[in-house]
Length: 219
Image 1 (spheres, rainbow, N blue to C red):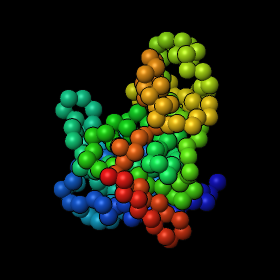
Image 2 (image 1 turned 90 degrees about the vertical axis):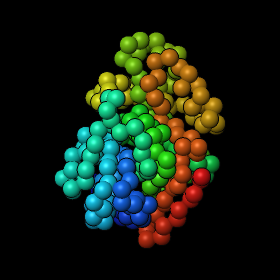
Image 3 (image 1 turned 60 degrees about the vertical axis):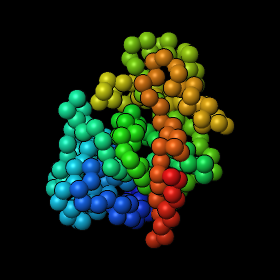
Image 4 (image 1 turned 120 degrees about the horizontal axis):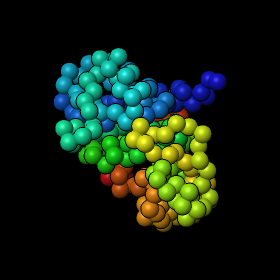
C-alpha cells in the first residue's frame, strides 16, 4: 500500500537534514522517515560525517548512498554523537515519545542517549495530545513467561528476535502517566528496554503536514 503520509515524512526528513554540519558524528534511526533522511544527507555532500545506525538496513542504505558508517558496538565503537535523528510512532504535546514500531527501540534509545542533540522527525498524524498503546518492549528470552506474568497486558509480536537477541512485544494496557509507566517497565526484571522516550532526551521535534514544517524545541 502507498503510505498516505510519505510526502509529509519526506518534507520533515529533508528539513531535519539541515541540522547536520560537516564534521559531525550522526546517529541514524530506523524506518520509513529515516529512509527519506539518508538521501537528503547524501545530497548535502558533507565530506567528514561519521554515522552510526540502529539497524543493518539503515547501514546498508547509508553506505549505498556514500555515507560513512562506523560501528556502535563493542569497546571500540563510537562513544559520542553530536546529533541523532529518528522518527517516532507518537509524539505527545508533553514531549514524551513512543518509538519501536520497527522493533529497534533498544538500539534507538542507546543512540539517542549518546547524542548531544536528539532530533525527532514525524508526519503531522504522529503528533497527539497524549500517548496511547501499544508501547513496544524488548524482553529477555530467559524467564520470559515470568516476565509476561508480572507485566500483564503484553502481546508478543510474531517477528524475529532483535539483533541483540531480545523478544519483541507490545504493552497494550491504556495508561495516563507515561513517566509512571516508564518507571514501572524500567524496573521490571526481564524488560531489556521499552519504547517510551522522555522529553529530557529530546532536543527538537520536526513535524510536517503537507509542505508546512513546524519545529518544536524542547531543550
